[in-house]
Image 1 (tube, helix red, strand yellow):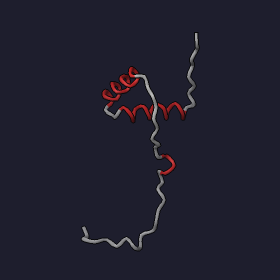
Image 2 (image 1 turned 90 degrees about the vertical axis):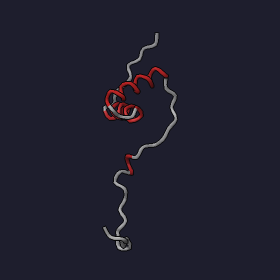
Image 3 (image 1 turned 45 degrees about the vertical axis):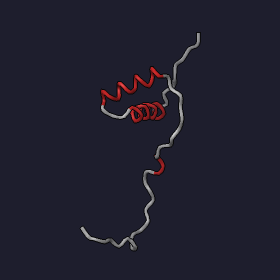
Image 4 (image 1 turned 135 degrees about the horizontal axis):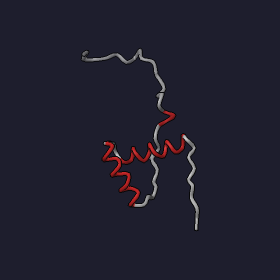
Length: 71
């Protein structure tokens, strides 16, 4: 490895992932729902927030609609 690098000749490159960066939001979730995703995340071996994001992303990509009926 060199002690010093010359970055003056380097060309700027746009971040290819900029379009898919995540945005922080605040959301209120039922504690049972959080416990469910935490348990599932533990079984799968990933953080529960990543699991929730993956699930919601899948819903958005597949255009899944919630089938809810009020009594």
